[in-house]
Image (cartoon, rainbow, N blue to C red):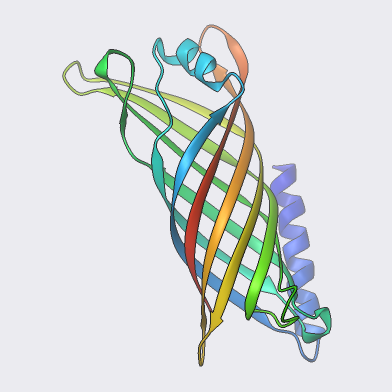
Amino acid sequence: MKKIIVVLMILVSIVNNAQTEKKAKIFAEFGLGFGQTLFSGDIKENLQLAYGGTFDPGTGNNLIVGFHYAPDSWKGFGLGSRIKGTFGSSVTGTNNENYIFNYYNLGLSGKYYFLSKEFNKGLYSRAGLGFGQFTSKRENEAQKLYKHQYGIGSTLTAGLGWTFPLKKMAISVEAEYEYSSRNGTIDGIGDKSFTSGQIGGNVILSF
């Protein structure tokens, strides 16, 4: 809850500054993407403890919504917020059962057009810091068996992309890497750490 309040306070400050900046610009964005989920550390061992079985990470579809405040005086840099959700595909794991790994994150986002020095034009880099949750599901339809595991924690993201300006909007193609460390409670065992990530690509419409 404290993290949510901090992020909201920063966002309110950004919007207030935008209203007083003569040449302020706020760019909204909406994107779709695709990525490969990554497991690291002892996440598979902890999923084994939670489920009595485990699985290899699969792919997922990304949904992105965000905005950046980028006044002309910042010369290609924008600061804002972004929420990204990944809807994982079902994969087959232990005992031929199906597993799904979904996750999302919300946080601050910084975007910099270091060549053109003009926001929403050309090559850019992006970095984000936030928090979010994963929801994993084990299911066996034949036995009507459904079990879930959750975890909440922090997420770091880094991306590199290119924006193609159009008349009233722009289209960006972006490669992105994500790293998340989350904690969850396993029944009968206690708190465990779940470290995961993603490498993928997104197509983003901004206006």
